[in-house]
Structures are given as C-alpha cells and as structure tokens.
Amino acid sequence: MNVSRTTRYLLWGALGVGLAVIYFPLLLVLLNSFNADTSFGWPPSAFTLEWWGRVTGNAGALNALWTSVRAGLAATAIALVLGTMAAFALQRYRFYGRDSVSLLLVLPIALPGIVTGIALNNAFRTILGINLGLFTAIIAHATFCIVVVFNNVVARLRRMGGDLEEASMDLGADGITTFRLVTFPMLRSALLAGGLLAFALSFDEIIVTTFTLGTGMETLPIWILNNLFRPNQAPVVNVVAAVLVLISTVPVYLAQRLSGDTASGGRL
Image 1 (tube, rainbow, N blue to C red):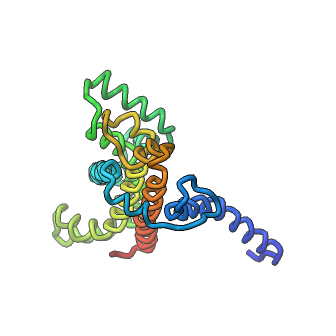
Image 2 (image 1 turned 90 degrees about the horizontal axis):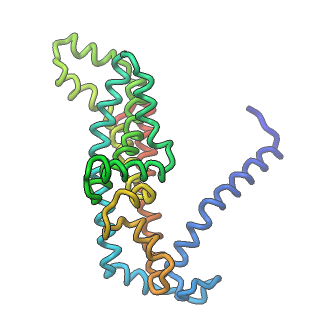
Image 3 (image 1 turned 120 degrees about the horizontal axis):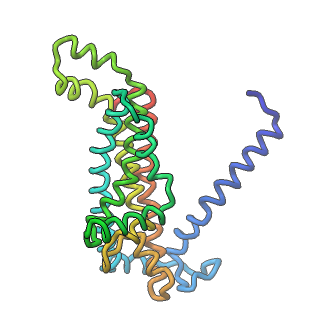
C-alpha cells in the first residue's frame, strides 16, 4: 500500500509517542536505581552503586526471588503437560462440545485477575479445605499459563498437518516412534516458546498470587509492592524493579524468536 510522505511522518510520530509512553517510565526506574537521592529528586544530583550492593544482601528480596522462580518453573511444567495434551485432543480429534472445551481452556487468561484469585481462594479454603501456600499458588498460576502453551501448540499443529506423521506410520513406525522422531522435533520450538511465555507470565503475576499464596510468603512482585512505600527500602525496590524489567525481557525476546521460527516451520 502506497502512503504519502505526510502520512508516513504521522505514523512514525504516533509510533514514537506510543513507545515513549511505554518505555520512558521504565527508563526512569532504571535511572532511579542509580540515584543517590533517596527521595528520587529529578534530575538526579548524583549517581551511586550503593543500592545495587544492598540488594545482594537483602534476605527478603532473595527469598521472594526464589519463591517466584519455584512457582514459575512448577506452573510452567504443569502448563506444558496439560496444555500440550489439550492441544492434541482438540486439534486432532472431533467430538461433541469441542468448541466449548476450547473456549473454557482459553477463558482463564481473559478473566480479571481479581475474579480468578477470589474464586480460587474460595475453592481452596472453603470447598477443598487446602491451606494456602506455595502449592496453591502454583496451581493458580498453571490455570492461566496453560493458555499460552495451548495456543502455541495448537497453532503449530495446524501448520504441521498430519501428512508426515501418516507417512511415518505407513513406513512401519508405531505411535511413540512417530511422536519422538517426527512430531516432537516439529513441536519443539512451539513448546519452548510457550514455556518461556508461561514462565514470564507466572513470574510477573501479582493479583492471583495475592489471593492464593500462603501467609508469610512473598513472590518478588509482591515484595516490591509491600516495600514500595517504605522510605528505607525505596532505593532497593528500584534496583529490584530494574533487574526484573531486564530479566523479563529475556524470555519474551526468546519466545518471540522461537515463535517466528515456528511460523516458518524451522527447528532449533
């Protein structure tokens, strides 16, 4: 489509404004992590690495990080297994209620987090009689992490078709051999992309975690929220937030690259 020079300039300007709105606040967080002024006066009068040094010895932040990593890895593992199984069932088979099941699988990621959190809190405590803890938070995170794995695998299965698998079985391979040598290699990039996105989604979650994590436990996002308005902790919080922003870009970037590889039908 051909557009005029004026239109191109307007579009580039709109893009620049949009990116500035999104990323300028993140840049401020990064700069404030080096700001020597604890009140975060602007512009910074001086810069320091003191706050970065304090983070390495902050037991609360380190414990919260470890909790986030454990919850994210466990939720991602559950999502990979259940999301992949659901994708195969809905993509490869036709049965009554198939579309309804697909909708129910995708729905959790569209629901407001506070609704999901309250519902799971009531289910764990009132109906199932399970005390809240890391286990309940993992199950809660898995409910919406399944969605990203499911979507990635379904999209890949649609592109794959079934010709290569049928050819493999026609040549004498059984179902397990066909999956190991044909299906899984073609699904690998989609699984990795879905797993990375699921981990990032779990790691950053705060609303559902607030309602499903046990008392006295904190994930890193909850630790940031709890310490944000404490004067002595505010500089350290900025450092943790800056690290979180930098770390969060890694799985998202890798997932994007892997999704592109999946779209082209390539392999890792």
